[in-house]
Image 1 (cartoon, rainbow, N blue to C red):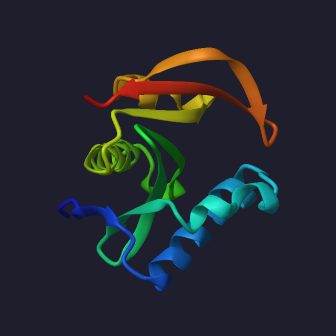
Image 2: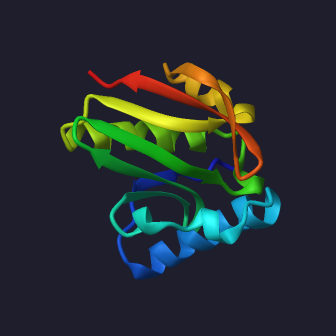
Amino acid sequence: MGQTLIEVREARDESEREALLALRHDVFVQEQGVPLELEIDEHDETAVQIVAFEGDRLVGTCRVLPDGRQAKFGRLVVEREARGRGIGAALLAEAERRARAMGCDRMVLDAQTSAMGLYERAGYTARGDVFLDAGIEHMTMEKALA
């Protein structure tokens, strides 16, 4: 069996936005125990929501929030069965492309410490100290997009 192509792009409609929120709920709330009130926030309406589809199945998502010359990356999730295949890196690369297109020259994110390797491989560097967000250790990371 050949490998199915992964399509990474901006969410197109309300049904895709509902699907990406459901995937985030599965991973963050169900799997990691993040309280629902911390997972969904006011930025979901204004953020650029990026999705990864394998055929017609949503397998990953993330969001980008432009803020002047800086973009805030977050809410990266990949479905459990699809992990370890480069989907997170593809979502991150598309998010960086979108941020540059919006005039941003740096990306900032709060990485779960268990996921820092993904961001380090993509050129991000950690700053500051480890902190807890929803009971999970995180570290702020950043990268120049020039």
